[in-house]
Length: 159
Image (cartoon, rainbow, N blue to C red; front, side, top):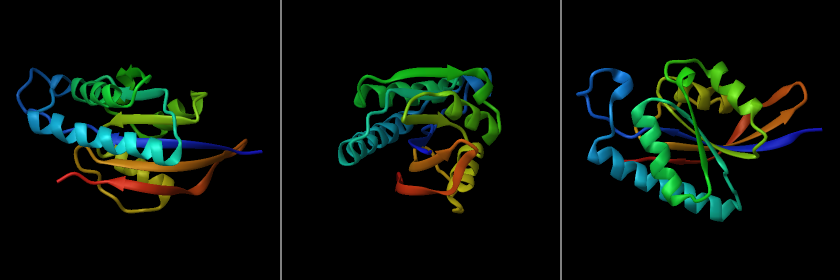
């Protein structure tokens, strides 16, 4: 028996370069505007495909948490779980979070190159996600793992 999980994979918006550490970099005004457009895309896709994301899994870095919070203002009733270990990590760490979640629709907010690698790993594409871009993916999961390739339903470009 298999289950279907729908995932919005979102790269954080443009961030400022001035901060005590890379982890503490905040979104630029341009980044905020781009993420607001991405949030509108996510909301429209939820209406079109009758999706109800209840959980946003995010890196704990400032710019990713800000991105998740902007999305949560548009797409209502979302809980944000931010994890330090998703800051500088691999696709397998994200897969672990996906597999541990009971939700059927998730929003993931993180960093490159990992998010681009994840989209490419799932779908067999060669995408390079730019700031505030979003991939909407449908995964089929059986007891022994994900069925490849996953379906890239839509992709939101900014700029």
